[in-house]
Length: 277
Image (cartoon, rainbow, N blue to C red; front, side, top):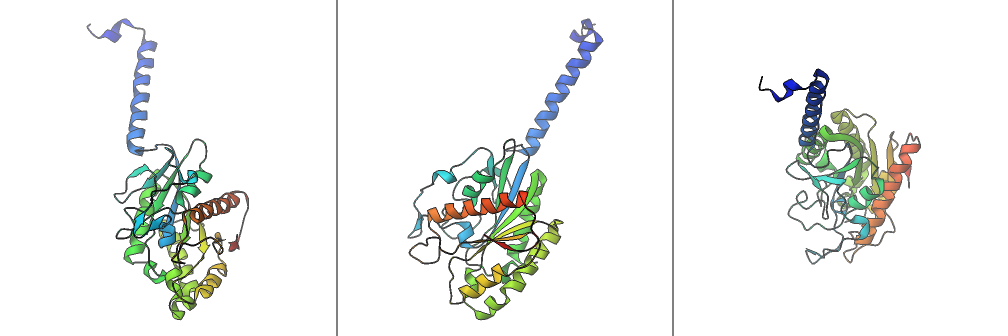
């Protein structure tokens, strides 16, 4: 017999074979999981420009300033436009909110606060600047893209929450402002239903600014939503850029931390209706 294993006891042969099989299984899991094979806590980032991030954007160019709170971490990933996981870096929405200059948003500051030992965070950027809530209705291009990206992310972890910052474009028309609450509630119900996550946590941001004169109407609608597992983080008072519309870089950091606190609070406290922080 030329088999080198022939001269070893049966127990040693079995042990060696089992060892090789274990290595092969581990390699298969790593290949399947791609970057960051650890179980992911996944967060969907939706809305318009202040979620996509305009922090540090001046004259159509991003200044490249990344605060320490937004530093990259090998355990914090993002789903890129090609539906592949990669290490998350600012600007998170670079290849998602295309045609516009993206800068710092709240996503990485949030992720650095909620990252757990032994896990990775998966961010799924989906925000698009200048969009009204009507453009996110079920069946629309934006909704379908949001749903596709969210469903793809679920292969590699668990969606923990939808982080939503939108509504500035709904302050221009009084009709849009008056119907915001109903449209956003419908959006939440549809999104939860299509993902088969009926209790999905939604953390929305009450506006800090608006494009029109009905900002307070939209804010009232946002803070007046009474749905299970919906939280509201108030951005009013955060410093704005010279355009009086977009948050500064440090305001985005502060918002990300507020969103993280809202999420972490939800882990240990039950809530049955919109809670404003």
